[in-house]
Image (cartoon, rainbow, N blue to C red):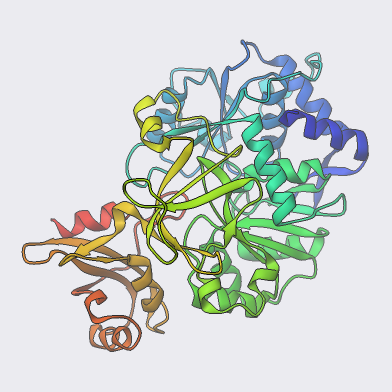
Length: 486
C-alpha cells in the first residue's frame, strides 16, 4: 500500500464530501481532489524518483501537489516558506530537484537553476487539463518524501522517507492519538512543509477535511475561529503556538478536539496553563524528521490527573516503535540513568540523501541514534533531557539545560529562557542563562536555589530582547554560544 492509495480510498468512500477548504470555503470534494492530483501527475515529465520541490506558505494547492507527485511516482521535497532564498536554493541543489512549485511571493525571489513555476499561475492552471494518469502500483520501499532537517547546528540534511515509513507513521497516529472520521477536520496552523503536512495522510485516509487558513500562516484568532466553524478539529502546533492561543484569553472553541504539540519543549508550567484554558484536548509527541512524528508520546488521557513528572516527560513508545536509552558503549542504561535515546521500527528513515557519513553515524546496528539525551523512570515514561551536544559539563558534573530552563520559566519575570554552556578555565564550562524578561538576577538565584541543586545554578545571566530562532521556532543555541565568545 502506498500513499496515493489513501486518497484513492477516501475518494471511493466519500467522493462528494468536502475534502479541501480555504478558510471556511470549500475548494473541492474528494473525487475532485483525486482527479486534480491525477491530472497534475499526467502533466509531469520525468522518470520515477524525480524530485519535485514545493516552496509555499500554507495553501490548498499543496495537498493536490503532494498527491500528484506521488501519483507520478515522484518524490515530494517540501521547503519551509520561512527560509531565506539562499537556504531554499541549498535544498533544491542538494535534493537535485528537477522543478520547483512556489507561491507568487517566493517564486519572485528564487534563482535556483531549475524551472520555478508559480502555484496558481496560468501554467499551473493548464496542468489540470492534462490527461490523468492511472493510479500507480508503487513499491512501498520507494522514496516518497525528502524531509530536510531544521538545521539548528548547520546545513540541513535530507532524511529519506519511503511510502512504508509514512504509512507506519499514519497507522501509529490513528492507533495512538486521534480517531478522525468524515465529520472531522485537520486545521493547518503549522507549516505544511513539516509537522502539519506530515499529518495529511492519516486524516485523508479517514476522509477528514483539510482546512487551510486564508492567511496561509498561524494567526491565533483565525485558528480559533476556524475551530468554531469546522467539525471535529484537530491540529499539530508547536508549543509557542499553543502559548499564543492561551494568550488570546478566548475559551476553547466548540469544535476543537485535539491539539498535538511537539517540535520543542513544552514546559510543565505552560502546559498546565494551556490545559486550564482549553481542557483535555492535548496530545504530546516526540519525534524527529528521521522518525517522522513517531518515537514516543502522551495521549489525552495521559494528561489527566498527571503529576509533574509525567507532564514533563515525552511519554512512552509509540505503536510499532522500539525505544531505548543507551550508554556510550551502546549497552542499555539502567532505569533513571541518562543516556542517548535510540529507536527502531518501520517509521525510521533509510538514511540521509547523498550523505553516507551522516547516515552511518546516525543509523547503527538497526537503531536510529537521535542525539537526544534522556532517561526512563520506573513507570516506563521517557524524560527528554537535552541534545547530547547541549549538555553542560561543569567541574565534571553533567548539567542538563532543560532542567534549569523549566525552573527559570516558572518565575513571573521570565518570558523565555535558554541555558547554554560557556568555556571556563577553572570549571571547563559554566552555565549561562539567556533571559527574555524583567526579573532581577538576585531574584532568579533565590528562585533557583529553592528548586534545584546549587551547582546547576547559572554563573551569570544575559538579558536579551528575544531569543534567536530558526524558521521552525527552535532556539539557535549556537548563536547564543557565539555571543559568549565575542
